Picture (spheres, helix red, strand yellow):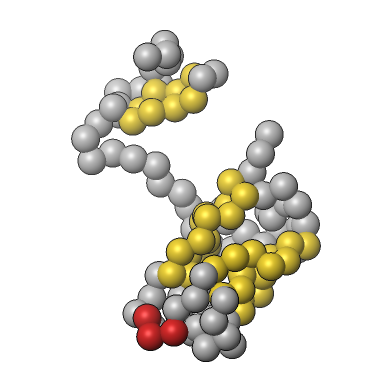
Length: 109
């Protein structure tokens, strides 16, 4: 186990080798909203969502999941376009997909 320097009494530690939460029930929380790295998008229209986000980069990694209740026409999700500093497009393999999509963006260093 790496040696993490302690940061506060909350059970959260961080250091050069990473971070961890030592408290049961604790975890990672990411702020959502305009330009955030965790995005709750609107419903897909014809299997596509164009999302404006100034923090997106050409090297951004995307983690996508369906998040709504329109489960009758779900398709496989993928990012079909990225315009660095402007927007990204999520596309479903099913053009009838109208579900909500959650997006987690991770930047590389």
